Each structure stands twice: as structure tokens, then as C-alpha cells.
Image (cartoon, rainbow, N blue to C red; front, side, top):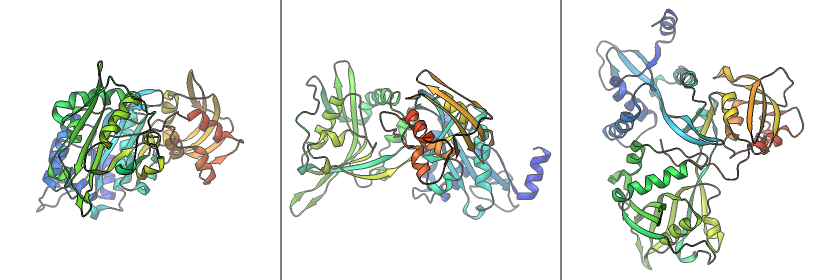
Length: 436
């Protein structure tokens, strides 16, 4: 520990360091308590241990304080007590321009009686600095509370929706694309897993926002314990295949329900991926044709999901906002240089960034379909904004113009926000389906 770090301890009573294997149980307890986990400590420990075995401990940070001489318990490690943590998975995510490394921030929490002391701010700042040193230009997370992570430069960049429909009142369009060479097969999940992984890997490489699933995350998705079922059936896998291989799949559970008028069963779709329009039609046809089913619920679909276009009456598809993946530009100029652009743009941005000061300042972005340059400049700015609106617009799912109308960014050159929005636009909504 350096002399400067020692002074920090004297002033604050706690400090931050990289975690080791011995800290793991304490971290799980801290995060579980911070998130009010109802799964139980041992269940959470088992789940996190499986993911940790794949990624190691070198990306996990902990905040610790000196433990009292008579203290014991899960949070005490040696002579230190863990009071906070922040983790980051090494993911590969489809960004505009290609598949890139991103940091999947998770395991963030502070012990309840140690809040309001600057622990979270210190953890988040240290993590951003570490991610920059690793040359990870983008970080993403699922926010338990958006007000927390908005303070640190994160912003919602994708949207997911729950979609449901009444089976007796829903029909697929007669002109929905069909391929009679496709074979639909319902089977057990373990036997279908190789096909599931193959299909998802192809989709993750082409759909903005998707993250490639490692073996550990597939294990986590396919867990089939009573807690995971929540009163529903075991997980089922339906796979649509062509002669050249699998073209799509759906993972779902059924819920057995009856009432005076007869069966009112439900199908709950956990995950659905199709590589072709005909494969998506075949999957929907299977889900809508199950006997005794009154309602089909898709847990999470993008805002531009084709389901609404495949049914004869789009009003039958009822959607409800589910969640948003939050994104943070760790290396703003690097991330803008790596991005693809739909239209030419030449603009100067005056950027503020409290927690990643290396991003702050004036940047000139020049980009077109052939590439991009982003470098510091003394030219007058066209837009003045915080880094978070750029993070929200980075995947093409949101606009800077919306932030402009809300008064959150300042436009010094007419139409500067609209022209940058045009360059950032994508033909489809970004979407993330990995729970981490």
C-alpha cells in the first residue's frame, strides 16, 4: 500500500483493492444483501461460483475496512471486512461496426450500513480506470436502479419488451413466409443444446446489442431448478432445422391452468432466436398451435420484433416495457472511431465526464461509411453535452434529438443533433438477451 493510499484509509476508514479467491463468499453476501436477494446465500454462492470459475478474480474489485478483533462471519477475510464490490465480465458484443470486447459490469453492491460514504463512487471510478487500461472502450450493465448508474455516465441504450397474445383470437398471416423444407422438433434441452448454441452464436454476431454466450452463461440460462420454474413446467426446446442445419429455436415453459370454462394454459417463452423469416414463422406456428393453450407470453423481445407483422391483427400483440441495457463509453474517442456510420458527419462535441475525465473536452468527429476519425480540437463546438446522451445513442436505439428537446444538451449549430443522429442510425433496434 502506498503512502497516499494509507492517508485515504486514515481519512475514510476503508480502501479498495483487487479481490482474491478468499474474498468470494464475502462478495456474494454483500451483493446479495445490497440487492435484497431472495434466493438464499448458498444458492447464490453456487450460481456465482460457476460463473466465477470461467472469468477468474482479476476483474473483481472490493472495498474493505479493518475488521474488529472479535468479529467473524462471511464478510470477514483475514483482518479485513468486505463492505463493497464491483465486477466486470469480459464479453464480446455486437456493436455498430463489428463484434468488440465490452465489459459487462455486475456484482455491484455496498453493505447497507456503509452506504453514503463514497464507497460506490470510488468503486465505479476505479473500475472505469481499470477498464480503460484493459482497452475496453464500452461497458454495459443491467441497472437495479437507473438513478444510481445515470450518475456515473451510463444510459439506457437498448429496450426489451414483454409481448403476449391471446391464442384463440390470433392467426398468422396467410402470406407469412414458410419453407416446407424446414423441420420443427420439440425435444429435451440437453440434447438440443448444441443446436441452440450454434444458432445463437450466428445471431449474436450480426444483431447489434447481443452478447456472445459462454459455456457458463449457457449453463446458467438452462438451469432448471424448482426456483427457476416458479410453478411452471420443465424447460422445453423447440428447434427448426433445414438440411444445412438449425435455423432457429425457442426455449419455453408451460403453465397448467384451468377454470370453469375449460383449459386456460399458458406458454412462457424464455428465449427465441430465428436466423430466417421462415424459421420465425415456423416457431410461432408451433407456439400458437399447442393444445389447451390460451395465452403465449414472450419474456423479452426487441421493439421491432417481427411478431406484430406476422399476425393478421397486430392489436392482438400486447407489449409492456421490460428492461433496458445501460451503456457507458469508457474510451469515448476510441469507441466513436470504431463505430460504423450510416451517413457522413463532421461535428465538434464539447463533452463533460466527471468520472472518466480523460473523455472530457472538445472532440471533432469526422465519419462516413468508410470509417471515422475522432480527435481533440480547439474548434468551436456544435454540441455541448455530457457523455451519457452519447452512450444512449451509441447503439442507434435512441436519439440525441430527444435529449435536445428535453434541454439536456445544447446545440450551437442548427441541426447538429439531427445530423449526428442520422449518422448514428441503424436499420434495426439494438437488443440484448443475456442476463448477467
